[in-house]
Image (cartoon, rainbow, N blue to C red; front, side, top):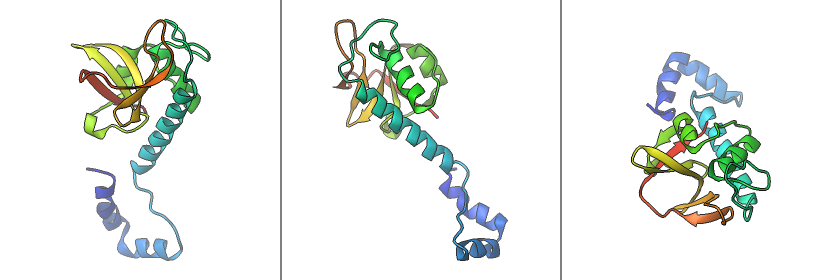
Length: 157
């Protein structure tokens, strides 16, 4: 049941008179789940902005910023600056994220690249089938099109 679908049952429990009184005085109804979704979206947007601001930073295996990054180091750094601590590795980040479908993905979600059941790379979804990521040794943080279908998506909240 989505948060919006819960509104009628909340209204029934609160009573129509209470809802009308609340509306008359300019109040608002707090719906469980909506605030969480909004805060997760704000967190994701901020993390995406941080990752984009690191465009051109060199890849370095094991680096977590602020000047050099590996893939999970970039996601860890970006979400930390946005106010959320993530685990160090791509696999651990996958295990702690809320798994979502490709159809549910939004800008700021994590994109996990896998071979079978092994996660080997992570980036931050930027929309339009592109990610911000730190690709490999000799490369830099950049925006790139997702190049494979072997991806899973995760949302940080």
